[in-house]
Image (cartoon, rainbow, N blue to C red; front, side, top):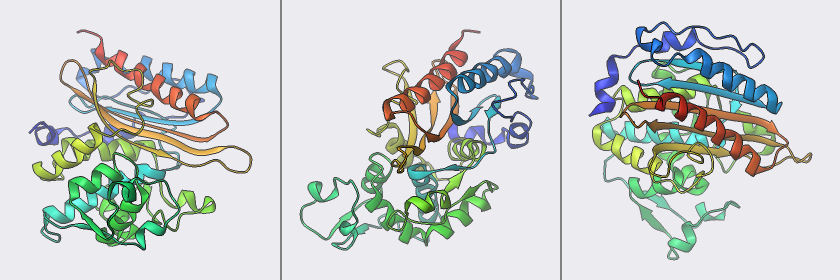
Length: 313
């Protein structure tokens, strides 16, 4: 499978050489012989200029999974994950299955107590008889596809808690991430207990897709949930061709008393027309814009990436 064949690409060190702030639009060349085909400097400059013109706090990290091209803008800044956290959470759950610590047939058990959380969820409408069980693919269709917090809280318990998710992701060599709370206990003053940097998000996407950290079965389960997700169609996939394939995970906070959105995010992997793959992570922090404008910002950055890597050789 492609995601395992790419495991020889050593891009982590390269990624660290291509990071910078939006206020410094000069590009650091990526040390890869193939970057002459699609040099990342112009793309980085274009994205940095776009972010500066928006006067927004936006973090971006991009990685071409086959060639190792990388770039970032505000790549090591901390951003609140919100529901992006459900991606590392799902990876941890599937790792436990692959390692035999959980059965592949384990059920995600939803109780009346779980449904008492005041959060948007279609679980009770879909399953009026409570309690009920979900298979792992069904649970990920909710937690990944619909950003369902109730399902995610139960998965956190199965993972061993937020700290266990953080520990497993750290064990993969990705340390620029913190997982400190589930969604039942998250409050407006604790949104940054679950945080990540754009660089770390892109690295985690790479490990998931290219390094074979999950079995083929587990990889396919999560990838399908990301590709089929109904949430966030106006973000990274918003301006892509209708037939474009992208597996992604969104994250969105509410608004504070000043009508500011703390976090508006999307991370994902685009399948390019030539069969290659590009990981993209975009995080918007403390935005005064309407949700539609935040989504458009992410979509326009996604379109820049798509256009850049769709240029014929």
